[in-house]
Length: 391
Ligand SMILES: [Fe+2]
Image (cartoon, rainbow, N blue to C red; front, side, top):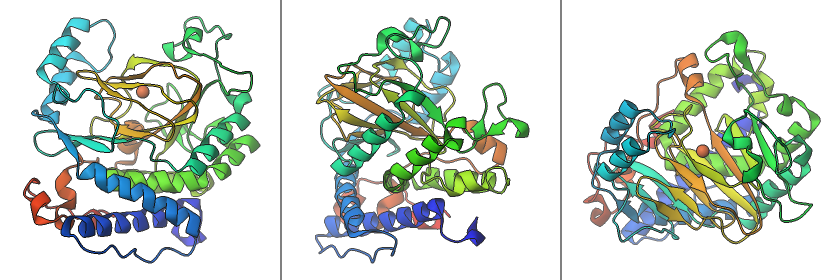
């Protein structure tokens, strides 16, 4: 890919590098009481986009510096979870015992409506909560792009899918107006077709992305893709490194060179969910150490998001981004009081295993230790990693 000149994937990578530079510079200035001098921007970024980046980065600094602590080790939680299985299924008593052993947050903090992170006892960041962070114009891009592909979405209140997963259960969909987008669509520039996990011949570009509407969708949200990729790079530089290396490895296969070159996301897959509430569940094909990104947009005010153990609630107004491991932590969304579209961005673990790229570690606060002031630094532990050296 590097020899073919600038493309969407490369511009995404340049943008994320710039956003990480801005983040570390602002983190340093904020915690040392210095003036903030913005690093020079890449030439392909507009002034408008750059301003959006800075408002996003400013909130991420606040979230990082305002962690909600837990008293337990998330690796132990994941170990105990593996003993009972990640599927919620009918094992209510076992889940209840697990959640009791690992209370999510201080019992005083059940609802979080400001920019926060949630960390375990070793400073591993388990969740980023960023209310209303996505700039309005980008919310509009995402929402309108979904309206334009409404006919490509599957499911809805009138579509019976006997035997299908709960994700297409008609009773979960609600339309408040005939113009609302409704349904679900999953797609990727290169992933394994169902039943073909890990097999070279099972890798495929989703049919939607090969269609004119798919290409139009990608173009319509390319700025959002670059911004969200930068957000992920700040949230978890090692996950970004892993996803970057995985997609570059897949792009060496000529079947996927074009689809990945034109893909403006570090995430390898997207699920669009329009006007459907979401039962409490886990997503079993991800990885415990990785963040999935959930982005909500639309014409509504509130659609409470629940994250377990212990029932953490987030108001989840339009523009809210929540990052967490959908495999480790049960999550669900209540009905919105209007038209809501959720975009989930993620990468399945099977791709990383297939490409033999080094897996990602947990994200730890200490990754940013060298940029924080002495007061905050005392709260962080052994710091060995430089996020700029991960690539
Ligand atoms: Fe999920």
